[in-house]
Length: 201
Image (cartoon, rainbow, N blue to C red; front, side, top):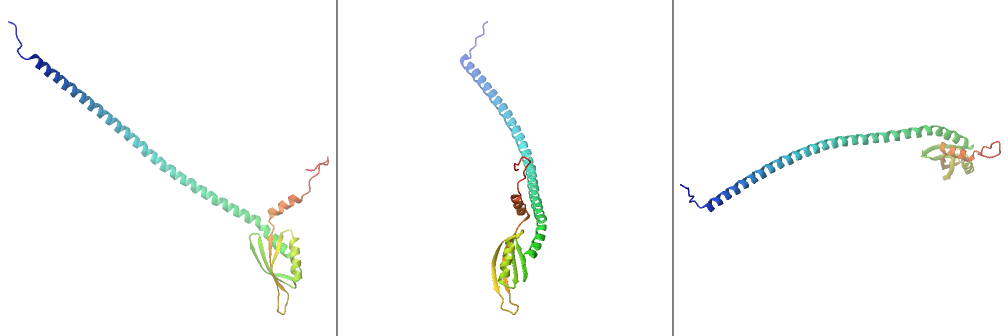
């Protein structure tokens, strides 16, 4: 005997489609959740890796900063050593200049003249002394002008004493000639060397 389906087939088909839709929707949602979870985990691992790299970079930057500070300290120490070396070299060069200075002062002092004070500031020297007359002071200035180690005499004060000893007190500024100036002057005054052909070099 044939079986007759009395249920409305359209309603059953609609339920089947709805069920298939919900199944597909659930599958898509699950797939989306899985993809989102994988993306979240991947991004999290990438962020952690980047933070680790940043931490290493910061630590390396601190190390480099310390090295830069050490280099700057070494540069400062180097500059201090260079300054000290320059001062020592200057003092070594000035030692014979002091000898020349006092030797020259003895040579340029005319008879009847003596010094009471000698003060030096750089290359300038202030001479204070007493002379029998102002003529002796003029002679002293001429001797200084012709000197090899002294130059540019400038008379500040000359005053006649009113005591029984008489004479004139004076204050004189002169300039000391450095050894480098002497070398330059010697090079300028040195005559040219002539060769056998007569040409000068």
